[in-house]
Image (cartoon, rainbow, N blue to C red):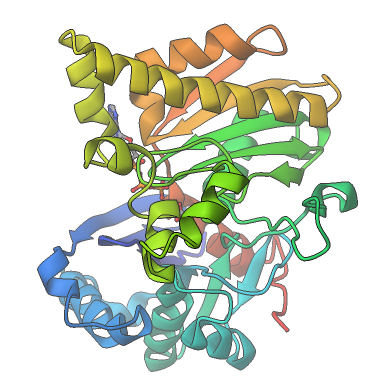
Amino acid sequence: MECYKILAINPGSTSTKIAVFANDENIFLKNIKHSADELKPFATIADQFSFRKEVILKELGIAGIDLKSITAVVGRGGLLKPIESGVYEVNEAMKADLRNGLMGEHASNLGGLIADDIAKELGAKAYIADPVVVDELQPVARFAGHPLFSRISIFHALNQKAIARTYAKSVGKNYEDLNLIIAHLGGGVSVGAHEKGRVIDVNNALDGEGPFSPERSGTLPAGQLAKLCFSGKYTYEEVRKIINGKGGLVGFTGSNDAYELEMKAVNGDAEAKLLQDAMSYNIGKWIGTMISVLKGKVDGIILTGGMAHNPFIVDYVKDMVSFAAPVVVYPGEDEMAALAMNGLFVLKNEITPKEYK
Ligand SMILES: Nc1ncnc2c1ncn2[C@@H]1O[C@H](COP(=O)(O)OP(=O)(O)OP(=O)(O)O)[C@@H](O)[C@H]1O
Ligand SMILES: CCCC(=O)O
C-alpha cells in the first residue's frame, strides 16, 4: 500500500499543534505552547505568520522528520466566508481572506496560510478541513429578531464532525443517517443540532451566543449589554473582550481553567460549585434547545472537549437531557487526526476537495 505522509497544522490562541501521520498512523505530535510574552510583539494574528512557521519547521527538524517525504499539508481553516463542510484546497482567494481577516481575527487563520507556504516549498498541496465557519444552518435558524441582525454559524466544526462520524461508526451507522446533538465543551462551548449529517442549528461560540464557557460570555441580556456599551465606561475593544476572552469563567474568577474550578468545588468551595453548576445548567439548557430543533428525534447526545473530562459537569448535563437520548462522552478532542484523515481521504481520492470562492 502506498504510504502518504500528511503534516497537520493547528494554530490556537496560545499554542500551535503539529502532527505527522503516515497514512492513518500518528508518527509525530507536538503541542508548541506560546507564552503571552512571545506573542506580545505581534499586533495582529497575521503578523505571527513567520514566527509560527519557523517554530513548526524547527520542531519538525528536531524530530528528524524529512520534509521531502510529506505528501500534503492540512491546516485548520480560519474565519473565512461561511462555507459548507468539507476539505478545501488552499487557493489565492482563501489566502487573501485569511490574511486580511475578512471575517475577523482567529489564530486558525494562520492554518491555511502556513500550510500553503510549507506545501509550496515541498511541491505538495495544501488543504484546510471543516473550518469554524462551516455553515449548514436551516433558513429559519438564521433569523435573530431584528432585520439589522442575523445568526451566524461559528463553531467547533472540525471536532464536532469528526466525533459525529466516530460515534456513528461505533453504532454501526452512517453519520448521514443519524440525528445527533454534539456539545463541544472547550475554552468556548458550541452545541450543534446535526440532522442527518448537517448542522442545521448551532450557537455562535465565538461571538456572544450560547452557554457561557471558560473564556466566553455566551448570550448576555441584550438590554443590559446596550446600556453597558453606552455607559462611557468601556471601549469597543473592552466590550468585545467581555464577550470573548474575558467572559465566562475568566470574568467570574479571573481564570479560564475549569479544572481549577472543579478542584475548588470538590474541596468545598460553595461559590465555585454554584458557578460550575450554572455553567453546566446553561449547557444543558442549550442542548434542550437543540432537542426541540430536532423535534425530539435524537439518536444520541454527545459531550466532547476538555470539560467533558469533568464528571460533575457531565452528570449535571446528563441529569437534564438524558430523557431525550443516550448521552455519550468523548472527552478532549482529536482535531489533529481529523485534519490528517481529511487529507488522507483526498490523497486516496475518496473525497474531492472543494473550491473556495
Ligand atoms: N482532564 C481534565 N479534567 C477537567 N477539566 C479539564 C481537563 N482537561 C481540560 N479541562 C478543562 O477544559 C477547559 C477547556 O480546555 P480545552 O483545552 O479543551 O480548550 P481549548 O482547546 O483551549 O478550547 P477550544 O476547545 O474551545 O478550542 C479548560 O478550562 C480546562 O481546564
Ligand atoms: C468557535 C470555534 C473555535 C474556538 O473556540 O475558538
